[in-house]
Amino acid sequence: MPTTPPLSLQLYTVRKELDADFAGTMQRVADIGFTRVEPYDFLARADALAAGLAATGLSAPSAHFRFLDDESLGGASLDDVFSTAARLGIPTVIDPFVDPAKWLSAADIHRTADALNAAAEVAVKHGIRIGYHNHWFELESVIDGDTGLEILGSGLNPAVILELDTYWAAAGGQDVVALLGRLGDRVRLLHIKDGPIEADPATQLAVGAGNMPVWDIIAAATSLEVAVVELDSFAGDMFDAVTDSFSYLNAGASA
Picture 1 (spheres, rainbow, N blue to C red):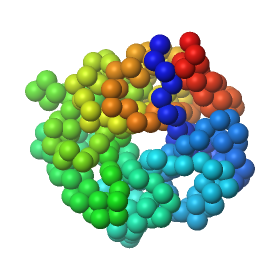
Picture 2 (picture 1 turned 30 degrees about the vertical axis):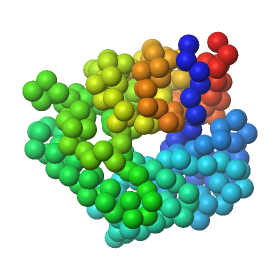
Picture 3 (picture 1 turned 180 degrees about the vertical axis):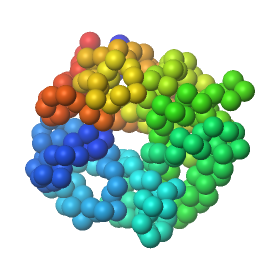
Picture 4 (picture 1 turned 135 degrees about the horizontal axis):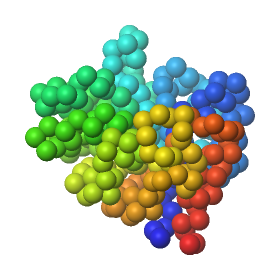
């Protein structure tokens, strides 16, 4: 079994808890043993996030923000997004969603690649690296034998990375280990989640409790920097699932 990679928690996992008690939830994440988190929509709560990171000692090596979407930007500029990331000490900003309708033709996918490449030119001025995170539909879309995500990767500048959501890739019908082999060192971050492998997030489980070949996937990610734990939903207490996920992944170091 591979050794445990550096772990982070996507804060979307505990979004309800953050809304109820931001500082307390950040502390609970740190108390579980996480030393890294992946914020989302960080422009809206930059001050609270800065305070939470400082109080807990947590770092944020990556974050999610839909910087390609005008509605999500809400009048902010790319410079606003990336300068805020730099202020918060976030070196990598990942766009987590491009409309499924834009993954049905190679031309549309290449337009998304062009938009990411253009955003990367803005980001680098602030010392920021950018990337893209998939759902299932980028992998369900297969054009001339290539998945939409692979077509995207072929059009990206070398500086733009991929954060592969391993569960959604599997739900999209892909052998994730084989996919990682094809995507190569473009993949620097993984989303690690588990469950019965289906598109319904309500059935997700703690890492180690479902059908994902988690350790085979981690071993196949040869340029992995951080593995990010995420649950989009969970039927029980979310902090139980987060704790169980952390414990399972840390067992890899001694198993």
